[in-house]
Image (cartoon, rainbow, N blue to C red; front, side):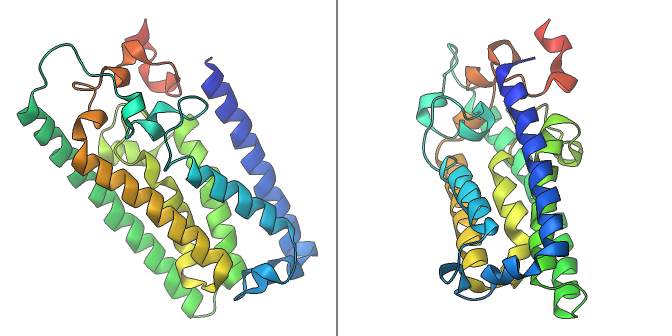
Amino acid sequence: MSKTRKDYILRLIGRCVVLALCCMLCLFAPQEFKVLDGMNFFSRISLLHALWVVWVFDMFLQIIPIRNKVPLGSQKLFANRFSPIREKINYEALRSYILTTTKAAYKVFVLWCLLIAVIGILYWNGIIDKTGLFMISVCFYVCDLICVLIWCPFRLLMKTRCCTTCRIFNWDHLMMFSPLIFMGGFYAVSLVALAFLAWLVWELCIIMYPERFWEQSNAALKCSECTDKLCTQYCQKLRT
């Protein structure tokens, strides 16, 4: 098992602990969620502030080039993780690949928007409140790493080989925090805004530097060059 995969397993355990703690707060300290209202973020300190800092830090790592500690799948948009193939790039095939994967990506986007619309309807009809929206995002926080380490339903729609080559790898925070768009207040707006920025940087880089996102033009994305090995459940035979 690779170091990256071990780290991600520990992160998944940590996120499960976060979910459990948030459930405990819902039951025994609901006043902690008052920081979600308006500008209450600045009026008191709560455990939710620590989680906000972790989330902001994670998103910050997606919009700056980091050589180590961040998986290639998340950092392949940057020049320092690009390893051009020795042969001449087939730009016609590259364009076809980008168009195909982008169409698949936006099918996922539409389906996700439908899910978020349902959540919005539940919120506006008083079936769930702001705390409920927050807890849905925390559940998505856990599911994000379940998709990486165990099973990913988006892989079926995207027909992606692994996380390293995934077209929507850095969509994770935008999808995670999308329930918060109905909430308002500094806590939610700041997270959604930064998540949108991370998504925008990713999408602009796909437009400007598509060769960084295709294994036939970026040798670093090939199974033979993989160091992250997050996808052992899919690609074991390809690496033997």
